Image (cartoon, rainbow, N blue to C red):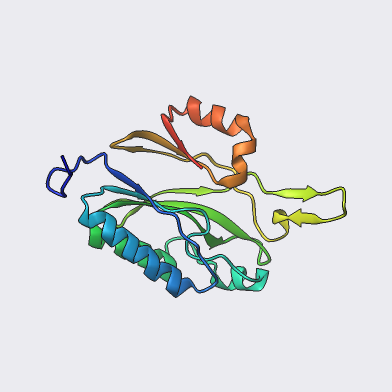
Length: 186
């Protein structure tokens, strides 16, 4: 039997994979189309990947596109998408302004089907590594580490939020489990 929007369960979810680039408007347009397609199929919850709105080509572009929490075109568009399509929208991560003008937060936001931001998680563990060949990757040079856990209650159960490199640090997941997280997003 094929599911139609009328018979779809409220637990039906969509995981959207994007190839985000450095054009925020193009990325948001693509997100809008994917979410629209999911909603037309009766999807109630949509999950986007890390850096869904911007995969920057420079650190300056990342800082320039960073928004104040609850104020900016990326967040306004994600709010509109969630409201228009009546979905709970998990924005894998977007850049938000931090206290340090040289660094941004890599923040996962969750919007309910009315467009309200119901959760924020700032990535805690940053990817800083020096390789034997001399190459270095220092995420901490342009990203501010968060310091708070974030869990939300949903139709799927209690969901704990994390981002990318956090996966390498089990203490974060033990803490989320202590907060009664039943599912964990990475």
